[in-house]
Image (cartoon, rainbow, N blue to C red):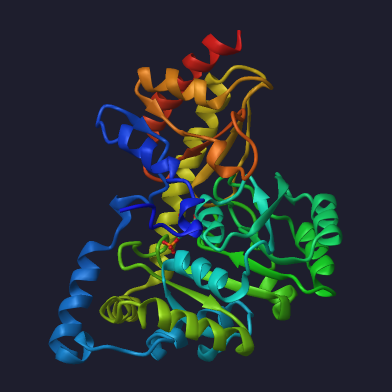
Amino acid sequence: MGNIFSDRISDVPRSFIREILKITLDDSVISFAGGLPNRDLFPLEEIKAATAKLLDESGKDVLQYSSSEGYKPLREWIAARYGAKGLGVTADDILITTGSQQGLDLLGKTILNEGDSVVIEEPGYLGAIQAFSIYRSRFHAVPVHPDGIDTEGLRRSLQDFPVKLMYCVPNFQNPSGISYSEENRRAVAEMIRQGNTLIVEDDPYGELRFLGKDKPSFYALVPHNTVLLGSFSKIVIPSFRIGWIVARPEIMEKLIIAKQASDLHTNYFGQRIILQYLRDNDIEEHIKKIREAYGVQRDAMVSAIREYFPRGVEHTEPEGGMFLWITLPEGLSAMEVFNKAIELKVAFVPGDPFYVNRKNVNTLRLNYSSVDAETIRTGIRRLGDVLKSMVG
Ligand SMILES: Cc1ncc(COP(=O)(O)O)c(C=O)c1O
């Protein structure tokens, strides 16, 4: 058989991170490469109890097909939680998706024609680059700094191109760990307010703040120009694949059509179990536990970096989330560092896959959520030895 594949799929490279994760399956490797929540914090007993209760009480109802929008009481729960934080959202504004990753795909399907302009953060979330690439979008990378997106770069992109989507992760960004300051958010909102660009505000980590104060969401600042994505992956468990999109009615209508075409609806049993779990347990207490644990792990990583990394290596100081970003001295390739680090049994993700048009970069991502504090110190010391041997 000849080449049967669509141009759409042929153009999208395999995930480089998957290749790296294969190397790190070796138990003797200390891996800062993954992007996984800490499994020790999964509420196993509570999920077990919620599942048993649901099957006992609701029987076959929970095994049936359901609505494309998602289970209404779950959407009401999510809307009420936004309400408690001052965001005016109703259940009808929410579409349950198969992870927030599906939200990105549905938005691509709904909004993007081939060649349409998308602003993406640099470095940016690999899953968004992949999702929008399938729709053959044209990316405009705008750098992020410790206090948010580069407003001058954004202004230029918005002026020079008819940007349809601006994709961003304003809280504890993947991969860099940075957050947009309130001032930065207000400046971006002002630029977006007048135009035809839709902000895709991806917020899977917003609840995982261990330092500082919450900042206003774009959905609060410019609701008519924003869709907001959320997820249970990082605050409960990722395996159910349950996330959501908050969107205004005219966008919601199209998203529901795209959702029906994709998978009819998100796993209904999973939605019911999550809601049962949320009703029977104190989610605030659970999230607090996650925040505290990640805060300790983040502190362990930052202090080990200060102690063991040579001068000239810079790092971000995340106030939440799961990642930290390293910038090596100019000219040093993170990929070369990776190859040496693996010999010393420590892994990370070199920066390359997080850029849409740069290669052999001098940046890298470190994950601290799934490694305990002591192992973090050992891994960072090893990485420090590699860097010292290369920085000269
Ligand atoms: C920024 C960002 N968006 C979306 C996702 C996907 O999350 P979900 O499990 O809800 O699909 C991730 C997962 O790592 C992420 O980092």
